[in-house]
Length: 273
Ligand code: S0N
Picture 1 (tube, rainbow, N blue to C red):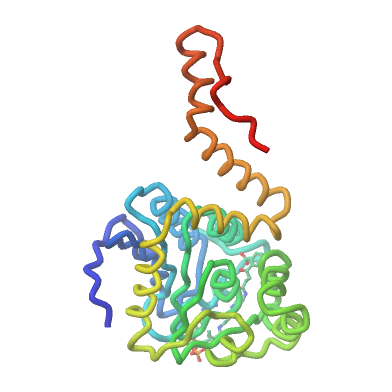
Picture 2: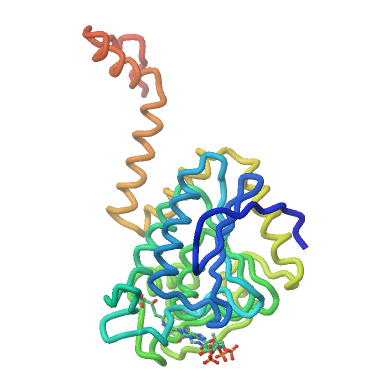
């Protein structure tokens, strides 16, 4: 059992948002549907991830599912219309793609804490997280070709990057499920622990990361993702480079000179080899 005193906030219907000790924990809370997501769930998840990003106290984010049966079973097939998942406005949406991008862009580590099933679009969500800690009852897999869907984005190529091309094809083409030890063996998860130790182990990983330099973690996440995110990844990395430059006296001289209506004097800054 974890000894964290989580503080709950936000007015959500489908998720729970909690914070403590530099961590944010976001829980998909639809256990009666194995934590399948609908448009409302995804809008709330996006809101919660934004809160975690903007909160200067938060250094790492945990994504998990309520109960012990599932992390997330993907899109809610019971409200799947002919053009996506139907929300309260009656319009079909596929807004999980925006959430996947948001997890990749969030400049803090996101760790998936998986008990039970992580399948379909729920599996893709854990693949998009930086790290995954699995309980010994966890089951992983894609179901798209069985239920009439597929994810040709991160769900395909980020999975291939994670487990290799042949294994990714097997996972998608055959739609088998894999247990936690098999997932560990293929590099799909970082650690497997007994179910009752899942949160304590995840929190321990968070605490170790919280001890480290936040800027170094931010740059490493950006660097690792930039390779596979192409121009979008470079855009993020370029933003981080600008952030670092803004923090230098050299950049501040340019700003100060403008405000003081004088010529900037960059002569004291070295032209590094
Ligand atoms: C998770 C499974 C393996 C659990 O099996 P178990 O433990 O035997 O429980 P069940 O009795 O099957 O389920 C318990 C109750 O939960 C309901 N339920 C389970 N999963 C879902 C679901 N995904 N949607 C709606 N309801 C669900 C069950 O129906 C049952 O309730 P009752 O008894 O009342 O009927 C097993 O349940 C399972 O295999 N579930 C389906 C997994 C699945 O196929 N998910 C969908 C996969 N597709 C996607 O996720 C879409 C992909 C996607 O998100 C995407 C990708 C790219 C671009 C856009 C999108 C997008 O769609 O947005």
